[in-house]
Image (cartoon, rainbow, N blue to C red):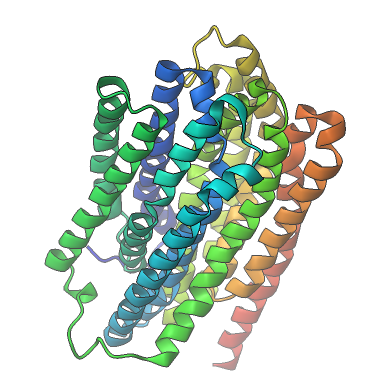
Length: 447
């Protein structure tokens, strides 16, 4: 069902929209977390290190896919809020074209360069072969990742965050079944974990498309709509690609950070793999609420409700910051215990390293909440280009700490690399978000 966010209480609308999205994000993280838990407990810490050793590259490539498709949803939400169905459908048609182009291009490039990527990340020794097999199969899922996230963005643009969640739930259950099948019953090792993830996501994308065609006439295309429109293509490119690049630019810094960590002992490689999963899980509410703010802002921008745009951004940012404080406290006191979801208690050295890392991260999660909210707000009201620079700042912060301090302070420096990046980027995003909201507010005065 469609849902307009141009009328009603902003907090209630944002939270109501975000709840199914939050559960969906958790389920999406469950793909990788289930892989890691089964791999770690069935195949051991080395295999877990192989699965997690390339997580930054996965974030770079798959993050570009997710970010680009999220960007495509911004003009869709704007035209839905403005009640312009023909322009909405034209935007959808051109988003299919761009998504198909990126699917072919990215899959070919990354799969061909998979071996070079493994070498760049300094992955060697016992985990080299498993890391390559896992990454190659994960990269082959790019078309499915793009397809599902585009469909999800289309549904979110018209206010439906429940349907994508339903298909992710089905997909998560399928992922668990396939994990056990390809790791425990049919011993394919790390490659089996990757194959299970690919097949599960393909299922969610295909079934979501079928439902859209049957139940959402607003999103269905007709022959008269499927005509090339340079403006629609340009608008999608301007909104989508910067958001995708922002994810990727951030990931470059994470790659450098992970490369620095991979040069340390195997204990820290395994610890990094585990804590990456926990970090992503803890970030799910940030992403869900920030996406809710973005869609709320886009719909109200299209409807000309500029005061509601400002109100929604402020209230949504406060919610994210409060959650950041709460989850930070949890990570500080329970990081080591939570890490036992992935590792046996006998892996005491790895668990100790996980506990130290999560404690250091927990002190700064409030800043990450503000960063997500402000960055997505800027993107939601049409300033994607400005949001990119926050990713650039994160990238340079991680590179500097990784190159200058990890060789000296080793894992201790790794424990604070993300936080430096968050503080720098958050400071920028707060300033630029205030400027963008004021600029949008001035439009109302001119009307």
